Image: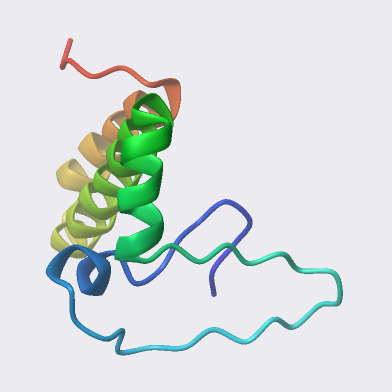
Length: 96
């Protein structure tokens, strides 16, 4: 289940291939924002700072998902994941 603020299709977007999943809203009033390459190119031209934030947040979300996938069943990695997640959420870019 995807929650508010989460994204899907990052790998497909970054690789320029079709998504392998679809999302269906279970509640009324759900807002879905779609980003494709032409929108990103326009954003890069018109507002590079916002485009950089979008790409950075996409990369952070993908990194978190990859870490979660690699941490299943390993308690020490789960603890590291919690620290990593807090750093991502706080915007910290350097390990402490």
